[in-house]
Structure formats: structure tokens, C-alpha cells
Length: 479
Image (cartoon, rainbow, N blue to C red; front, side, top):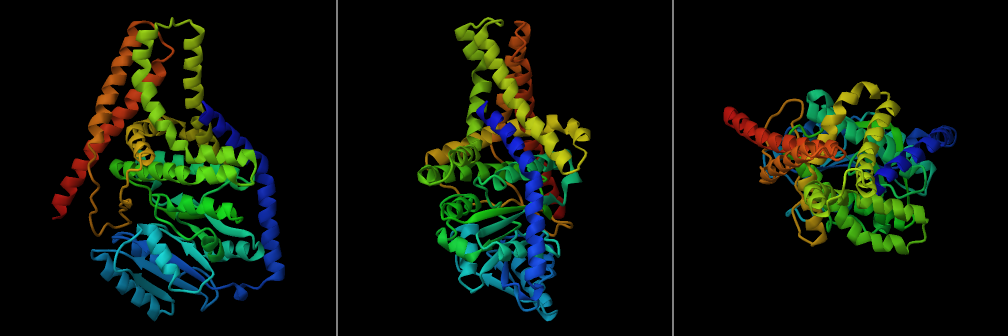
């Protein structure tokens, strides 16, 4: 319930600050145009960390090299940890771009230590540049990205990081990608602005942003002891006194996972990493001289994935609790319990619709996708719960990148099959059984919640199996 109320609070904060945020951006742009010259912008390095991204890296490299910026002041740095034919492609594209006059460097390490965080830190050591734009290999920056972000960093020296909004290259591919796109839009249309525009802790999202070197170094550099190095550095830099900036009208498009197992792996990494970061930094945050609201919002932000074990417990314990406690359907306790469930579940729905309207994506016309999105969010609860528990108990795991297909797939990158799909199918069957019990007992208050849980677990479990075997068939046909 508290997380649901916090979502409503985020929407309120975003709405009341929208006009002022637009005014501030206009003032920054006007100041830059009157006081600064484009040719005086400082040297910036665009970093593209890569690990076996044959299908997408060429597109990202070319887009990064073509960004508008004063000649001689922009370097594209491809941080290549690849072990497959991606290496040869990167070398070929880099040479071609160099022949066209672009400053493109390929940086490789002997060992892939620290994964993405280690690559970014290693790349920083090879240059004296004071600013670093960062893009994952599947993201395609617009040509004006550097000019629009760097003018903010030049005009406002207290800003340590500028984050742009994510767009989606393949949102229309399937119902799965459409649902994910709506979820991501909610984060960037409501949650990020609410934090950035109200002096709350805001995170860099790992890509589509620019960092000031001083902010990174003051925070203790990139660190790889969590799976969300971006969240970790963001909080540490703000604890060191640097401010974040969210540029909501600058969109950088990237790919959404088209495979449910890739999506679950991505969610697992985000869930585990955010809890790891909470364990690492929340004590420092509560000792820091910032507002109580900022501390509470930071807790909600980092601990968001902590609701997943609670969701699983509620779904699995509804029948035993009712059977043991014998609450009558008209009892106050049972009514309060049901209202909490419904109220908590309804808050994300409000934000999904609001975000689509705010982004002018015809929010009301996408209402029919909400059941898919809700089922998807519930269906990954078991996988995310395992991630949360691993983080709590200090179980280490490798940074697993999310495979992307690109416009024309050149190589098949398999996603691992998770036996959690079997657990999801069993949980779905149990929820449907509980649903039937409450239906037969004429106790209707908990029925919607149980039905959504049963559908969510079953759909995600079936999709996990189907997508895995579909990939196997596709791989064999290619061979």
C-alpha cells in the first residue's frame, strides 16, 4: 500500500513542477546562446561499452560518430570486451569512420574485470577528457544529443550528470514489447521528473546520458560491487554534492527485449542490483544532510523490487490465512485487507495511463494493454523475488547483458532457460485453485487479485517455455 501511495505522490510531484522545469530549460538555453559559442564547447568522449553485440553495435557507432559537435572535440570510444566476431566488425567500422575524419578509438582489456563498470572506468583512464557521454550498444543517439546536453553542463557547473529519456526502436514488434514500452515510459514520464525536479535523488539509467568527470571521481569512480553500477554511482555522486539533471524532451531510442527470458534476465539484474545498492548506500543516505522526504523517496526507489517477495507471499498465503483465521467475508479486517490489495494494484494503472497522456501517446486508447502489463509485472515476481533474496544474502552473480536483435540479425544470441518457469506455472495453477475455492465459497473480494496472479504466473511461465524452444528452432534453422 505504501508503494502504491508513493506512486500517486510521484505523479503529484511531477505535475506541480512541470511548468517550472520547462522554464528552467528555456533559461539555460537562452543563457548558452547569449553567453557561449558552440565552437567553445569542451572535449567530450562518447563511450560505448560492448560485449558480443554483433547485431547492433555498428548502428550505434555510426550514430555516435555523426553527432553534431565542434570538430576535434569529440571522441567515440568503443569499449570492446567481445569474444566473438563482433571484434572484427568493430575494427572495420572504426577504420571506415576514421577515414571519414571521425575520431573513433577501440579500447580493449586483457580481462573483463568489473564487467560494464570496469570497462567504463578503464576507458576513463585512457583520456583526459572532462565529460563522458555513455550509450549501450543498442541505443541510437540523435545528432543534436551532445549539443543539447553539454550546454546544460556548461551553463550549470553544479550539474554532475544529464539523463535523457529513453525511446523504443522496436516497441511495435509484439504485445510484449508494447507492454514493456508502457512500463518504461512511466518511469521516464513520471518517476524520473518527479525526483529530478524536486531535489530528490535521481539515477542515471546506464545509457543515454552525459557525466562530468569530476562528479565520477568525487563519488569514488565506477564500482562493480553491485549489478546496477549506474544507480550506485548516481547516488554516490549526489551524496558528494553533485546535482542530476533530467532532460525530458530529449529522446534516445534503444531496443526493448523481444524475448520473455531476456526480459526476465534484465529484470533480475535490476532487482538484485537495486537491493544491493540499497544495502550499500541507505545507511549513508540517512546520515547525509538532506531532507527527510529525499531519504524516504530514496528508500522507496531502491527498495521498490522488495515488493515482489511480498506479492508472492500474499498470493500463496491468501488461502492458508483465510482457512486458518476464518475471517468472515463481511469482517472489517478482511475488507481492509482487500481494499489494500485493490488500492495498491490500481496505482500503477493510473501512472501508466498518465504517462502515455503526458507523452502524447494516446493513453486512453492503450488501456487494453494494461492487463498484459499487469500480468507481466506479476509474472516476473518469482524471478525478481529470487533476485531480491540473493542480494539480501550476499550471493554474487555475473553481469549478464540483455541480447538484442538489431534491424537485421547477423547472429543468434541465445538466452538461458530458467527452470523458474516451472515454478511460475505451478504458482499459476495454485492461484487458479485458490480462485476457484473463493468462488465456490462466495467470497468475492480477493477473486480479482487471485485471478490476475494466476494469469500473470501462467502467461509468463508459458511464454518462457515457448520463447526458449522457439529460439532453439530458429537457431537450428540458421545452422
